[in-house]
Image (cartoon, rainbow, N blue to C red; front, side, top):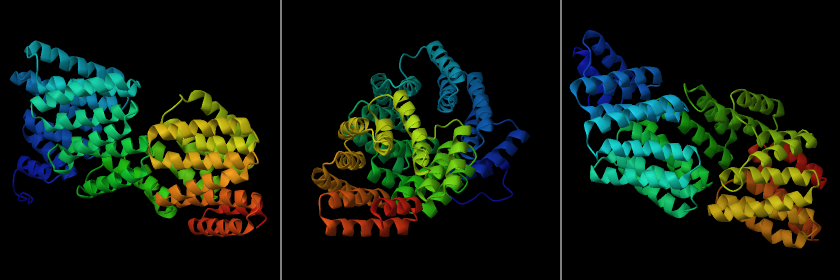
Length: 477
């Protein structure tokens, strides 16, 4: 849509900017129009959406509250309840449970007063119930609530409601162990998003949530695909703020896995700078990238900043302590984390490889083997290649430490193959290093030399200074 003429009234310019998804311009023009004459509820809702997407959450909430009261003044309780839903939705996502509960309760009372037993707004409220259940780790209750919301979306032909509900149901299914079914439901929900059938906020929530669902099951390939799709969506809205930070974080994670560490550092730093962005997670990633590059002072600073912001920088900090030769500190950290973390699930799958590494370094082979076996079970449950590769790598390292090099060799070759197929070169090089040691212990010096040469070349290309040092120390190179 072409921009409205400069001499047009601010309201027309604001509506035009909104249609073009120029969110900062839309907020400014609609706010100017509101100063001249109070906006009606439809335009107040536009102002709320534009403010949120321009990064002004407080201004957005203020406009949404005014829209809520304007709909009430008109006697339209369902539209007022829908405004209350969006206020509750944002507050729930921000972790402000008391205020979220207050607005959700107000929405329910308005619908009860309206007397309609069934309407789309009741479906939206079931989405809130589902989200709350997901936060409380009650996936079964969440799946039931999102299922009811999805049915309401179908009955009332509401694409926003249907997308939110199917997306939530897919994530609940994944947490119930239905990885394939949940992923298929999520991919199906994204069709409406990619076809432009949903509102901008729902599109942003769906894109980011789809990437995060891939991360939950360590699905590297799908995460890359949807991160690229999210990036294209953000690129089409240069004035977009809230989802850009989350995309930068996911983009940095993708670059990290692919071995483009310099670019990953730049993307993570940009994610830190986005107002309201995922700064704590980006700080953790910065610490991890510095650790991998052997810049231990910078890694320490990154992890400290993440901890100051409320994040737990483990297990990256434990691996940093291990690299610094502080094995006792690393052991204490992973034992503490193992005791706090619930069994099963992606959190354990992310943590257990580091736990195995620390336990092997401390010569606790029993604990390392138990963790390796747990990682194998979790990998089978998640059903994606990355945890299977991590499990094989851990199992091979344990076998080698136990003196069974011949059994370790094929297991480690399998890990190398999966890491290579996933295009995760750093982990492939680490697996090749352990494979070389297993080949040497099994008496195959030629194979050991080949694997060591390949691993050394990859570490050098990546800039993995710490791993190069440890490789030479462990092999006498």
